[in-house]
Length: 231
Ligand code: FPP
Image 1 (tube, rainbow, N blue to C red):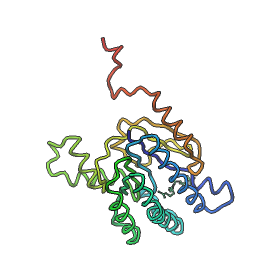
Image 2: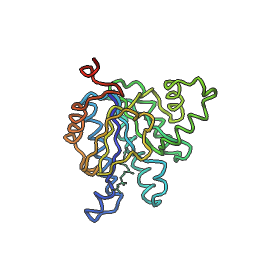
Image 3: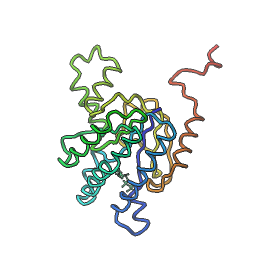
Image 4: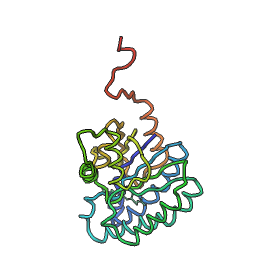
């Protein structure tokens, strides 16, 4: 099962407490740690987290720098735990606009966790689904014969996806908004959507479990009709 999460609400969480937005991101990083553990315990095969969109570069410089620092620190601190828990880390998105130190942390983490088989943790940084789709189109030499599977491989190349991740089964968005924000548009073609009002730093294993329970109750027809109606 592939679960993807749009982690929204860090800024509001901080503002509600009279704190700078960066404090919300620091608290959000704690929720990331807890959610990765919860997902591994729940037997999720792939977890993709939206950490920084290509549009997020337009935020104030201090906020962007703070986020880049948090990603680097997360990778340094969590890589050993991921190795111990057999979690494979992969950062997806563009790499050409990332700081050299972050790039080194990404490469180190991906190399050290490459043998992980329990769960595939994908963190989207400088990610834009529309950009990836356009890149994949540019890489397609003969688009007339292109199958969806071949297109997906081109998308993976454009995204720096280390292993084929497949379609998203469940997309969770916290923070009360109900939109996709340019996240995994191709991969979410048949995803079930779960929106949760809680702000990302408040997201706990219980919220995660509620989303999985909600998903378990959905009937996925993929455009077909149910067996009992097909006679
Ligand atoms: C959106 O909330 C969140 C982000 C743009 C950053 C996400 C970052 C983290 C969860 C922390 C670090 C992540 C890792 C992987 C270590 P927002 O700031 O737009 O919130 P708002 O809508 O309340 O303003």
